[in-house]
Length: 336
Image 1 (tube, rainbow, N blue to C red):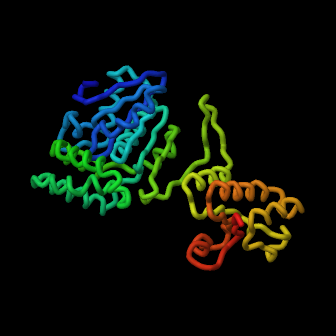
Image 2 (cartoon, helix red, strand yellow):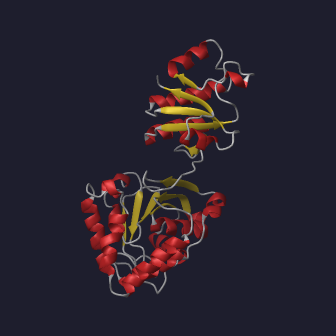
Image 3 (spheres, rainbow, N blue to C red):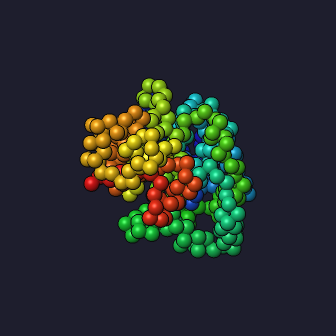
């Protein structure tokens, strides 16, 4: 019990900082068991069964994300926690966003793990309605056969079959009323994009390659002392592309690309190797603001990116031209 609602809560570790981990739909606090020991040497970690899941109390016919956020506020009060970083997986991310909208003063940061600030699409709402109908018809086993596995990429299902089996069992032990209540709440959740832009709370989005999202990354970072830094966008892009194992990195700019004569667009170099680029450094053809841009191209290639394009963003549909045709709109830098 943590607050006026009967919650299943685990409180472990210690430190000045606190992290609250929120599980996803048809999961429980136990999905974090492998993560918690990695955090507890440094921070206090709270895991909780969101109401309607695990063994926490079902509160009514519908659990709105705002209602869940207020339950978490009461939990923090009961545990004597003034501020925390809230990490939400999938549905847990929706709850974390609602908490940020209502109680941002209680947050050091918010982390979305395979989650989104977007509201449900009409198609997603229809799917949730079908799930509600299945549960109300006493056919939860159909949900158990499909839902846990659907959360994993096809190529990963065999390797992670034990995790899928655990999640399947979790579906069976989750109360029908809890499933219906949270499905109803998720369907009605608000669009939180504007709130995130204006709240001033530190944010981190963690997405898998197969999640189907196109993330937009703000290249602002902070150190352990809380100092904020504006990171060069090209530098950040090079490191991110390397970490992701990207096949191609496109750097949009407002010039034609690398030119033999900076004043003559007709002298565009369509392709260049790293060694050739270094020679152009030496003779001054690559100069000024083009130097750090090409440096970042080389950095990305050294980190495993196959090729990098310095693209003229002024040309209409330049990205489509680069990706879908044999034409280009800039200079391709290759390892050689």
